[in-house]
Length: 99
Image (cartoon, rainbow, N blue to C red; front, side, top):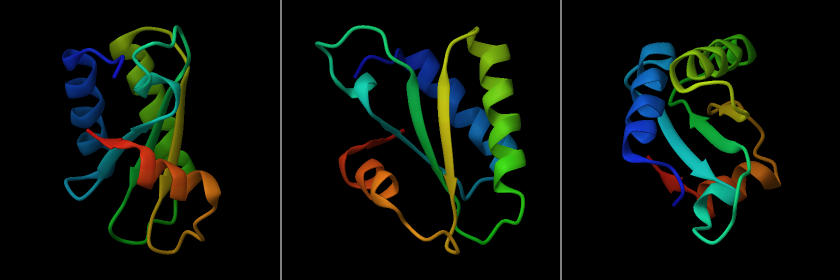
């Protein structure tokens, strides 16, 4: 995994701040490949209860990560029990790593 421990901690702590204690964070995509170079940070946030403003919360989370970790590309997907799971969601949950 190409994500330093301090980044992992900041990502999970920020998720708790924005989404609450019940949120789980999954890293997926190219950052899981130790042999790859570059790439954005693909994150899936899984919420345990339905949330009406997922897009707004996701945008706040993304902005706060950029403030804390520097300007880089974070792709943030937020799902909850009401989300119809698409292939990208299923792949992130099955092949990703929970932080």
